[in-house]
Amino acid sequence: MTAHPRGNEGRCPKCGTASRRMHSRYRRQPADTAIGAHPVILDLLVRRFFCDRGQL
Image (cartoon, rainbow, N blue to C red; front, side, top):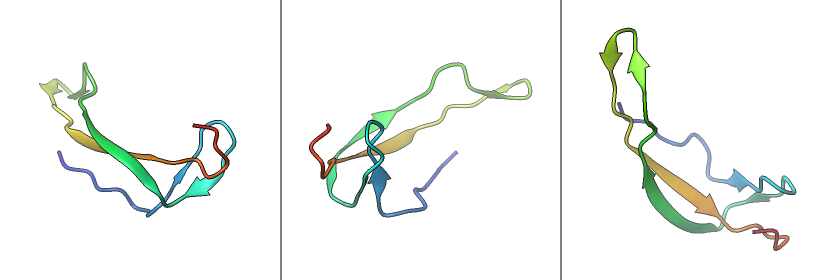
């Protein structure tokens, strides 16, 4: 499966401030994923954003 982000910004989980300044990207593969009886591997490229308020 392939997924793409729908927006150009992220929100800080601590303060909720929106930011478009990307910090980094990393790969993530959630474990134990299945659709019905079929195992599925999700390969996600996750983006991390800067918090403009300095929270992260």
